[in-house]
Amino acid sequence: MNIKNKSFEVDSIIKSDLCVGCGLCAESMKISESSRLIPDNLNDKAKDFFKFCPGVSRHNHNDSNGLFGKVDAAFESYSTDAEIRNKGSSGGTITAIAADLLKRGIVNGVYTIGVGSGIHFLPRLFTNANDLVYSAGSKYCPTPTLLNIHELLSFDGDLAIIGKPCEISALKSALIQNGYTNKHIFISFFCAGLPSYKGTLDVINNLGGNVNSTSDIISINYRGEGWPGKFIAKTQNGIFETSYDNSWGNGLNRTLPLVCKLCPDGVGMSADIVCADYWDTDDKGYPLFDDKPGKSLLLARSELGLNIINSCMATSAIVCNYVEDLEKGLILRQPLQVNRRLSFKERGYAAKLKGVDIPKTTGYKSAYKLSYLKRVKSFIGMFLRIKKQ
Ligand SMILES: Cc1cc2nc3c(=O)[nH]c(=O)nc-3n(C[C@H](O)[C@H](O)[C@H](O)COP(=O)(O)OP(=O)(O)OC[C@H]3O[C@@H](n4cnc5c(N)ncnc54)[C@H](O)[C@@H]3O)c2cc1C
Ligand code: SF4
Ligand code: SF4
Image 1 (cartoon, rainbow, N blue to C red):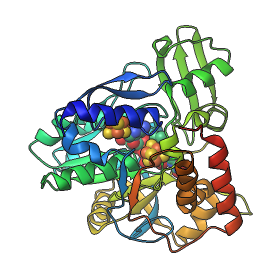
Image 2 (image 1 turned 60 degrees about the horizontal axis):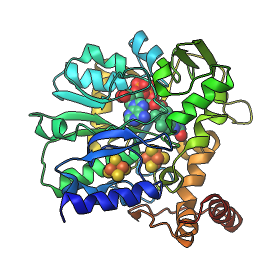
Image 3 (image 1 turned 90 degrees about the vertical axis):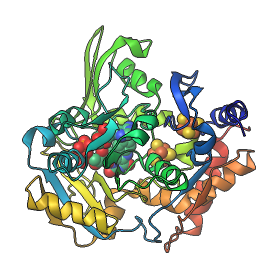
Image 4 (image 1 turned 30 degrees about the horizontal axis):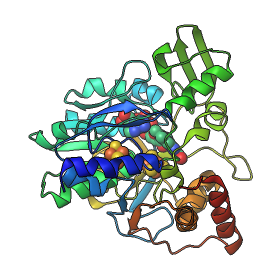
């Protein structure tokens, strides 16, 4: 199969709204009509890598039928570096771990989404731990983490690689199948879906910002500076800010692509280490979103992951408190992830019935089941939402 033939397949993935814009198959990206990033030119590895595209297939590399995937240990954690904790999405734990590994020479580089120009974030391979603080924080917009795959593949050394769950799964598959043997460390986070650029523009316009295009945005902070912190956009017309809750619920989450709605894994099942929000709760156990110093839920999913967490505790890069009853705690704090994990098959059947060539999934079995009623509701909800292909 040559690259020209591949471009037909990529076109069909894009047309079906199954492209998450990861950049794995691409040399460069462009903004689509639906305000997402899609491949512009394919890279010369496209023919080897395309079968791992998150819109084509998904594989769970850490076999387990647990509700939240394989969990070797769970902690509430935060960075002891005040700047990283403040800038981080929750506790700055991902950035603190990555920086500590780099400082100690356990890895030679950290590959993640770096600082961009305005709202345009690009991947970067960091070799100086002090620079990593600039990459901290969640970016709720198109982010082509795997676009610089050539740099990642040709790097002479071990890396900590940070990405969305679908990107970690795709990259691991691509590396294994193509015989790469480095001892990379894979770090991910819980992910409810990737909003388009339009999501951000809508939030700003709802605040009276009057922006038409991404180039009107000078800088953006989706959260951080507290937990969860605020959405703050600096534009040509001024500074517009609102709560994290309002930005996500009334703008960003309305622009998720179909591939995210069919996602079998929003909890980073294939990674060694995963972080998420583990909100404080009220007396009845329901999450509270009032601002406070950040904390991350920190999960070890492999022996390597647990060893790294232990070593970062030993150097005091992070503080960790053991979480006793993870499942009970997460069911209350992350009901959306529970629902997504247990109903992705029903949503897939609905999409298939509408003519979508849904991604092939392997390794996502669950010992738990949603009630029959909830599964039927998921099926009908998805069936009604999808346009006929
Ligand atoms: C699209 C998206 C959806 C999310 N959905 C959920 C959810 O459903 N539940 C939940 O608990 N938390 C969700 N989060 C937040 C995420 O869980 C937090 O980032 C996590 O708690 C880690 O916080 P931290 O402070 O330890 O990480 P930080 O120290 O802030 O580090 C975050 C790391 O992630 C990288 N990163 C940020 N955005 C992206 C991106 N778009 N693509 C690739 N890499 C990125 C950064 O470059 C950085 O290396 C989501 C984040 C994103 C980006
Ligand atoms: S999801 Fe990634 S691999 Fe698939 S078409 Fe889009 S950019 Fe290419
Ligand atoms: S919801 Fe799933 S498919 Fe969408 S960006 Fe997150 S991990 Fe990828």
